[in-house]
Length: 42
Image (cartoon, rainbow, N blue to C red; front, side, top):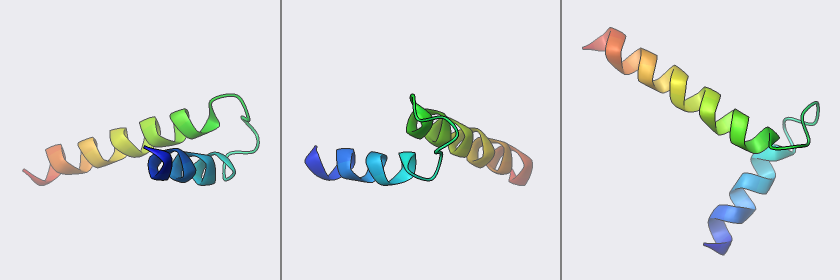
């Protein structure tokens, strides 16, 4: 669990424009992009 939290903190630092939940939106956007690619590839 601690490792995941550290990862999320690292991702959050890449979204400094949105310090509040920036990591969450970063992961959400990444998930949507992957989902679209998977749907398009199938």
